Image (tube, rainbow, N blue to C red; front, side, top):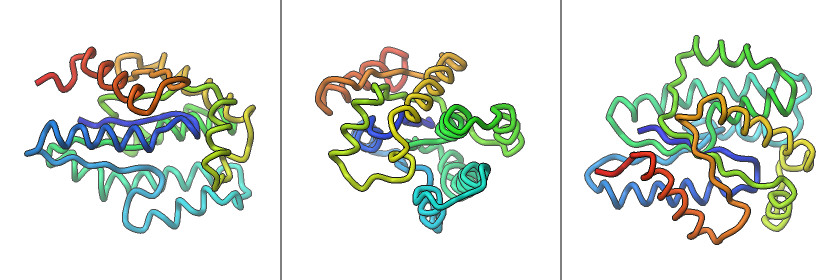
Length: 206
């Protein structure tokens, strides 16, 4: 299974992806479970991650090209080999992040990214968990956390566009997407909702 976690900055993706990976590891002790992330989830990828998060890129397509390059290498070196071994993969951010941020956030054309994903043979996730949160609340959480990157510093209006993109993407592929309201509840309570939602869909019931 290929499971992705999506959401605007401050939605808790890293924490919930890690908890879910731990849950899978305990449930399937004899199976390989891979926890990874984008950008930078492959050896050498941290350089690209730094380039897209430090805010110094100028050309309107530079971010998009780097994200797509990062994904191609991530798939070739990490994701596809794990899929070939029948591993369960948990990935924090994937192609839907690029769509939400570059199309709805930056105004670039959706059809270009759809074509590139198809031509590049990007594996499609089996499940995409969208952690939905009001941008104002997410911004508060990011401020408390500190170490704000270039995307997080663009403000609530920018994140509102990203959230709108995610909501529309979820409607485009409803069988794949599971939307989780993370605006209230503890980390543990939200994780319980995630597990219940996945099990209700019929996944991991064996």
